[in-house]
Length: 223
Figure 1 (tube, rainbow, N blue to C red):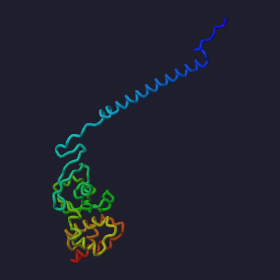
Figure 2 (figure 1 turned 30 degrees about the horizontal axis):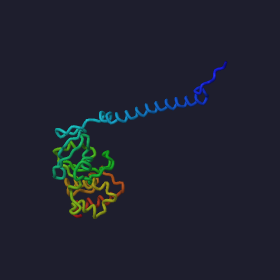
Figure 3 (figure 1 turned 90 degrees about the vertical axis):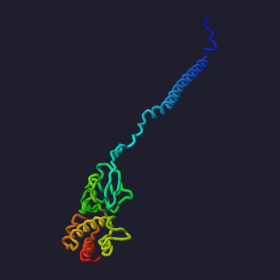
Figure 4 (figure 1 turned 120 degrees about the horizontal axis):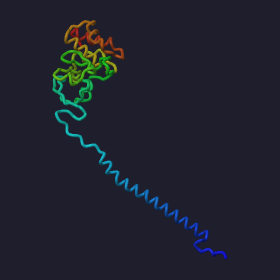
């Protein structure tokens, strides 16, 4: 005699049971993933806090953790305190570390080839891009700002203005500083002496004739 199937053994009952099983298993898996995500979110701030670097210590002895030093330079007759790294050039210190900034000294080639960054160090012309700022402590530094101001130009600055000795202006401060050093040493300098004094200065605009006229005018007692 054949066995009569129970209601629970019907095909529909078996399919329903499988669906319930899969649905239940999927819910358990999703719950596990959600729980892990919640646990991970809860642990993330703790991990981030644990990995944060400690607060930097306060500077001591005039030196920061980045290696900067506090130095004092004599610039245009005034003592100027500034912070810089031992590798900082005088050019960079003048333009970026002084307050207020001394931007008259121009940064053009930054290789000592153009003369635009010429300053006076102890009365002699020097290229600021080739000097370390820390090495200039105890020396007298003069920049283009130290020769005159827009309200009161020096004789050479005024002569450059009168004779159109400048165009774009990038090279002008370097020419003025180089020629001024020559005139300080030889007030009645000749054309050849003036040319020699600024032989390391480059003018890309080609205003050399006007530059020489301006310099000669001052050497001859004019403007």
